[in-house]
Image 1 (cartoon, rainbow, N blue to C red):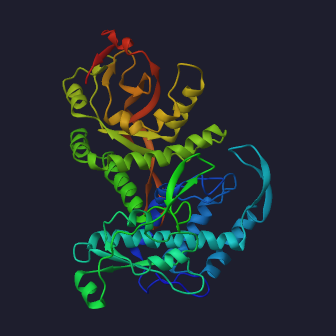
Image 2 (image 1 turned 60 degrees about the vertical axis):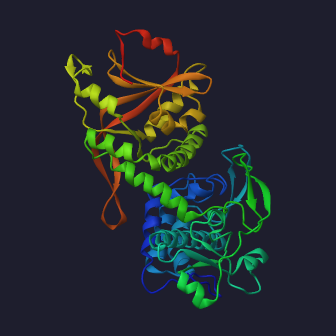
Image 3 (image 1 turned 90 degrees about the horizontal axis):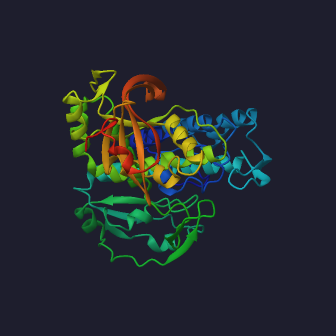
Length: 450
């Protein structure tokens, strides 16, 4: 990637395949937002969002235009010419008075404008390119294990970015987890991957560990406070490529469980525990904006569904023994995956809003992966055939209800970057509430599996 006087990004002649794949992957998770701080840092790695897009039906149009710009190498001028009339026709242009869904305050805000389109174009293309480069770096780090920080040295280079120019560190050095460029709005820095031979030939040496000053930043939208290195703009102190690989690897691996046999799904899940931390982060980034939308009274109706877990061996053995009965007949499992849909999130949220002692709080909902992978116990509900997960819900206990062999339709990628619906049979996480563990003492209604 290289900069230019007109602010456009110049790509090499060949399409940046990794960057295109990264952007298409996160384009399947589109999140409307009000403020750029609502979707924070690594959440951007697995979701496409544009501030002030909520309620205007423009997110798909903007995503498609960025996709074209990235795949076809469009300039900023071409990108703007393609997108501007669409946004103007839909009313997403100029300044308007709108209520902030977080505070209810009505104020004048900037929607579409030439300046905003430049920010959208520049940030998305640079982040996509950085993520594609990181995927390539990870594939080739065995033979080229070093990265050189490269800044464009001119009159507008940030002082600390100028200082970092020439820093050489191993690919897996923790410094790159916060300093991999871009490191701010319109940052033009990049990295150069080097082998040991390159270091010697170019006269470089591995740098000592950088000593960066940390400053406190509080995100006024989320209330989150964090320490970020001085010289990096808030919201940029993370490695977009590493976050994308984590999130998308977890989605891809766990997504395979939907089509796997129950036994194979359990085996894959057991060997895939290394992606659980990434799966947790990815799922939290997916759930949080949907809970925000529900809290603001905005319906979520895109029909998305995510794999959040897999049935353990104990559950498979229980079903294999013929003890899981429904209507007097043994239930045969069709899938080993546990999935959560947007409808399920809405149902869980509505239950939590009904009153004291009913439903699960937001903190618990955002820890669904923990609850499913490390439950306190699992039961079979004989009267209303379903799996019941007894979970830790803070100071109390809770239960999650998983409907077995649930017929659902999911969105899957199709040719040409489009999306189509496919029918699946899964185990559906649908309900949850605070309970007393004593209720499971009734062996006529419940049988403990694990």
